[in-house]
Length: 339
Image 1: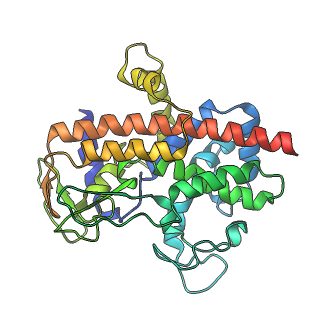
Image 2: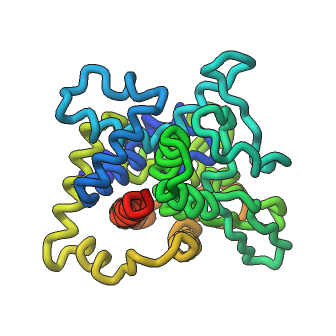
């Protein structure tokens, strides 16, 4: 039943899928909701105060009961780095500039907060390359998800940065910790058919079983990357994501459940570089497993592949939320000590 619901959710998502997006809004909000439930009271209060400075805060909390505004804003903030992609325009205070994936000025204006009007697409991933046929590899861009997670977590602990700059960095950190736990945000496959790499599965197409949709162009074409983005479905209601977080946390506390076993075996305290290595290995083992083959596809998905995707999605979302909570507790505790 859950697999059928997932297929329906992916079909609804097809028209909205864009390359290199990572978990969709539901996935990112679920990561944030898990983190919120695990954070200390002091860390929650500090995060809530910082996020009130985000220009989207009034929209996030409109109509939300006062006692839930902090949680809902925190959950919604995890989607903000994707939300600004719809705000690209020529001029105006609300306009953002698409600076591409490899800009020459990637290291400028890093501590100015919301005055930074670049999309910063290159912050969303770190594609560790591989090839099965000896194709030459290209290494990841120097400014990437790993470097920004390290930098933004440090900035939250810094006594010299303004609260606005910290608010900006917090929104990005909420998002990026989720990003790097999506396996296809940690690798790119290079091959004779795709010598420039597949951009984390964005250059490869898949089709779903019953009914089969097998297209490589148009609004219903589904990329391998987009399929993994939707591992938790496509409902973008914050309340639904919060309920999903509660479900995953409940299962992870149940003795003998696979999620409980996963948490017991996972080192939550390793640095972001290790998170990316974990995601890279998952991508090699599962995302590029049969029926995904060489070339661009379309590859016809199987029930076994989709079941594995589901299980890995639950696991990675849970681990990301746990790690995010630890990172924020540590950063805000350090900030208090230094102030």
